[in-house]
Length: 296
Image (cartoon, rainbow, N blue to C red):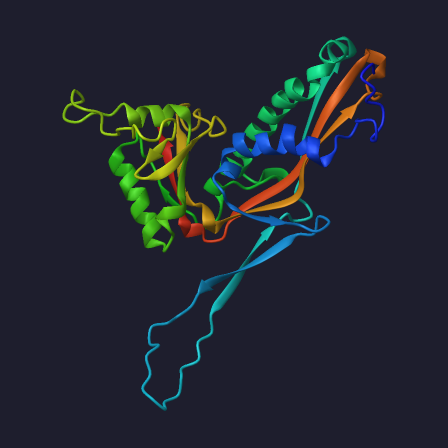
């Protein structure tokens, strides 16, 4: 390859600093789940992460007089397991011609890194939010055991949002660290709702002091096409409200970016490969509220 990317030392495997600037930092910005600031846990050598949690603790009678026996309580402890050994990795491969690589060599990182970041971000968001866990893949928040659901929502209303927030607070989750996740279509439907018979002022007014920041009921909104809008009869989607400080993301391998200049030599092509292994789970499942059956 004319650029000289022929070995790890020559740039076939980018340095940590290069990966941070062209891949990891943009990925954090584009992957809405990571941008929402969940709790991150890093695995040592790919070992599964076992995070303890308190499932139940009965404090129905904690008050005692002076010099009286304190009642002993036995909490029910559980655990969240991230990155089981069977979990698959996220892998993306993109081939380009050597001609393109030579012509774009001065900007290869920005030009091709951007495309790879977008692909990886969309794939991780889809898995982290609505993944089914089938075939040893990631189980997303919407399909995690124990989350709260509201079915058959139809066209979402502001009342639906308040009901979801109510469920979140009833689960002792913190509204201050909660965030919405939804498809662009559903945010647009909510923002277009008006007072009265749909002819008055918009119900949701953006703040003129915070340009570009999307919020609903004071919670940040993360819009992603990773949530599909073709479920059910063909038009259904989901809206998720989650306390992100009670959501854990396990990281075995942060995204690594490698340039392969020999593998497709018979095609006179080079390949760009991104590999990552990450997992997600709610520490307090009831702190995640999922609206299902959302339609236009």
